[in-house]
Length: 358
Image (cartoon, rainbow, N blue to C red; front, side, top):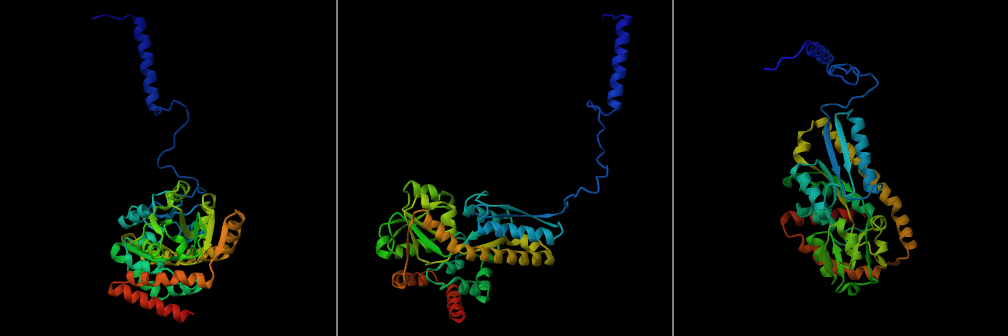
């Protein structure tokens, strides 16, 4: 074995002493003391509640749209009134997937809440489709009076067997039609490839009018119009303007043939797991947000029509005679999609309440 001299022993001893000193200081090579995990935080720093329950809310509309503003109102009310026990995160503009994927996520419980068009929810709960029936609603005031009443609660209750807790009906607006040709009558729709939300009811509606309905998800609609996959589509005026469909369409027909209502819905198991106080808070917050969304939609309807006219779209407003031609062809669709006893009862209840509300 090789032997080392006295000088090496001295150097080794110094290194060993330095190493012991470094370990004793906790290895802080930057020379600043690290706080103990149990150190008290400054009183001015507000720490989030560790047991806060998270509610992720998804929707499809752009930032600052009516539904998006209403969703953020829901977040504001819930977080303020729950004193931090409930936390809400908003994911708009289809951040969490397609409309169907968002709905499936709520049904499975991977997200807690979504705000979706009824046509997206009907494949999961087909009794909801009555709200989408063409020419069912004479005006928005009558519609919401019915949907906020007994008939609406009956419709929402049908969601529970599918794992949803229906909270309320949100506004978007009466639908208008954009297309590459002027639409004034059902004859004008013959052979036209009309984009629809993937919904058997809407497919049947456009077939009754003579069109060729093509299901396309919302996120793919602009490109589908631009590339000629479809020739036209239907949506509220706000959506048409905000999604800039006027860039890829030439005509706008104000038909008011159907209302694009949304439903705010939660995963039922999650809702049931909340305390009664939390459930009531969510119900009240949803109503406050829903009312705000309706006010925005009502105030902006005429404004969006004016903006769309300014884009250069050729605008056609159907008169009563033209609307009647579409309505006559639409009535058999009501019966076709009301086959079960429950569906027939719901439709009759809606008819009665619409007549009473007027």
